[in-house]
Length: 262
Image (cartoon, rainbow, N blue to C red; front, side, top):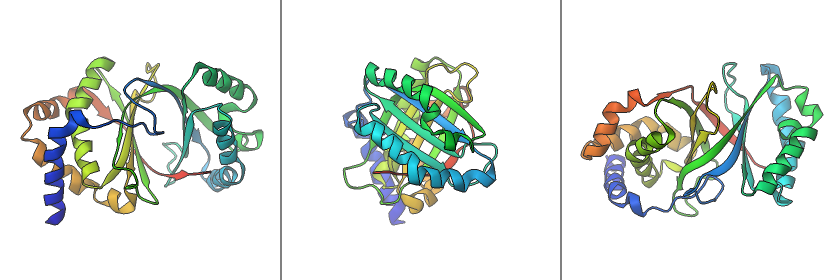
């Protein structure tokens, strides 16, 4: 009962204060303007998952961290699919750039180390998909409130309207829900990306949720129901809820853990 009361209070505050929230990027960059990103999916055969993870821990993460420290990239996050899933990626890299010089530097990286990997790692990779994208929305809870071992839920979408109309839908329907989850302590942060060249891509938008550990993820369904029950009082949210099926299609989600070299 206490959980639902807490969520209810959080949602009421969220709806009132949404316009006052300060957006922060997945990599602590302002999201008021689009940020250049490359999102890379790496696929391996099931028998090579352990080898890929070991490579990243021994060598791969250090390569990305060196690029960040030397200013070749603004930031990076490496996610590893928690489960074997031949229909989805095994590892994902979210690489952000803050200057044109960094973008040019990445082009050079692609020539010598495709997708940021060494030849040794590339030999165990079966396929790679790279998608230039923009970080268009993000938010996080209060500093220091994140879980020590967060869990990530990556959800890709296709959408039918223009990017402007999709952003309006997101701000009206999705953002108030996430605000409620963050205030309830279930989600620590999120980031919304849109693919720059979405035609024929597997996805056009992607939301990456950082849950408050396994406990936060286990309360996902409970939180969704409680927050939506409160948001029914918001006529704009309710109208967007009734039309969402004509706007976007949710694709296969992935539960992942971050590999960190910092």
